[in-house]
Amino acid sequence: LLCLEVVVFAICIIPDGCDTIMLRNTYSNLQYLFYMVQDYPNATEMGIKELESCRKTRTDAVLPFMHIGASYLALDSLKQAESALDSAYVHIIKSGDIPKHQESLFFLLYDYSDLGSTKKAKDCSALIINNPLEVFSAPSCMAFAKYFESMEKYDSAAIYCKRVIDDGTETDYMYEAAKHLFKIYKEAGDKVKASEYAEIYMKMSSEIDFGKRQKLAATVNNQYKYHLDQKKEQELKDEKERYKTTLIVVCLAALLLVSLGFIYYIWKRNRHLKEVTT
Image (cartoon, rainbow, N blue to C red; front, side, top):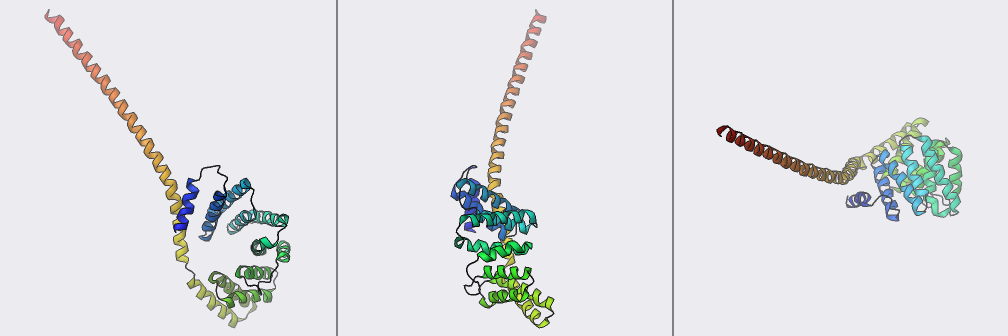
C-alpha cells in the first residue's frame, strides 16, 4: 500500500505538461494497478496518458500500446483494442530488436488469439525465439495455449496448460490453465479429466485472494480521490474565507451607513425642536 500511495501522490503533484520519465512511469504503474483491480476505464485512461508522456520523451511506445490494447480488450472495445495492439506490433518490427520484445510478443500472441485474429497471432508466434515448454514461462505457455485453442488444436493447447499446472508456482496462471483444461475436456466428453481439472480450478479459485483485490480497488480509488479532494477542499476553504471577508466588509459598510443615517436623523430632529421652541 505504501507503493500505491507514493504512485498516487506522485500523479497528483507532478505539474501538467511535465514531460519527464518519472511521469511516464507513474502513469504506467497506475495503469497496471487499475487493470489488476479490474477498473478498466481508469486503466485505459492511464495507458493513454502513459503513451502521451512516452511521445514527449521519445521513448519506446510498445508498452503503452500494449497497456491500452489490454484495457480496451477488457472493456470489449475490440476495434480500439486491435488498433492499439497493431501499433505495438509495428513498433516492435520497426525497432529491429526482436529479442528485446519477447515478453510483449507473448502478450500480443495471447491478445490476438483472444480477438480471433489468427493471421496476426501466427505472425507473432513466428517471432518468438524460445519454446516456453523448454525455457519455462507461465505467461508464454498460456499465450501458446490460447493460440492453439483459437485454431481448434486442443491437444496442443492442453500440453501448454498442463506445463503451467505441473510447474505449480504461478497460482493465477494455474487458475487460467485449469479453467482452459476443464473446458477442453468437457467439450471433448472426457468426464474424468474434466472433473480432475474442475477440482484444480476450484482449488486455485480459493487460493486467489479476490477479497484483497477488491480492497485494493477501493484503496486505489479512495487514495486517488483523497488527494484530489484535498486540493478541492483547500480551494473551497479559500473561497469561504474570501466570502467571509467580503461579508464582514459589507456588514461594516452597512453599519456605518445606518449610523450616519441615525446621526443625521438625530441632528435633524434636534434642529427642528430648536426651531419650534424659538
